[in-house]
Length: 243
Image (cartoon, rainbow, N blue to C red; front, top):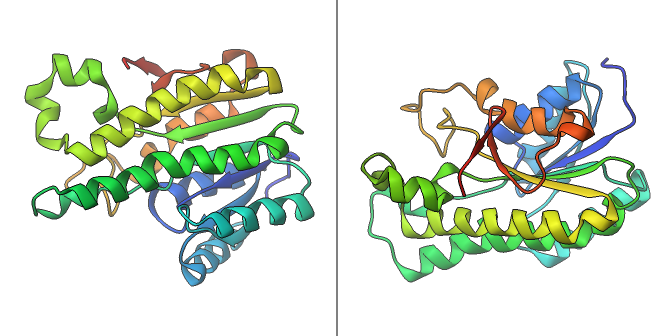
């Protein structure tokens, strides 16, 4: 069993892929990990897997676009821990990568999950985060949301830059910057992470990075010394990426 460090981390979309791996790495570093998943059975299975290797882990149901689910998670955290130290807005979708044409419905649904949900979840959890002496919000973003990269390296990123996904991540980057400014007076630090192209259900097995490496950027942001935290920046493996 990892020695607890007294910090509580909530990770959305955490029953598989990057979310579960972030939970594993933080759990082994002593964090109490709350794994949020829309599929309750899958969340419990992931939690059991991490508990078996010594992590202090708790599964919760969370469909990130459901206001009642968000309220339920807030109540659970309030009653169980009384605070939150780290929020990782990891849940995300890429509906346009199914090989079919983009349409307005796909864009709308993508924005709901990738942009509006992180806003709503963070806003609901601000009171609990404000009780931490080292609160951090980490938004799982992408370099595909970087206007600078799109402008300078379109020949590389253009084939991946579908309207809904890329726009949602560009919006998430702006949300990160706004949150870093507006939540600073509550002691809540905010940054965005680009994990890289990772072997997950979303990234596919064609991706060059393993999930352990892909999780490292968020884990580093969650665990680094407070004075080193890159407030309001988009980070990949310790390096700042352009907005």
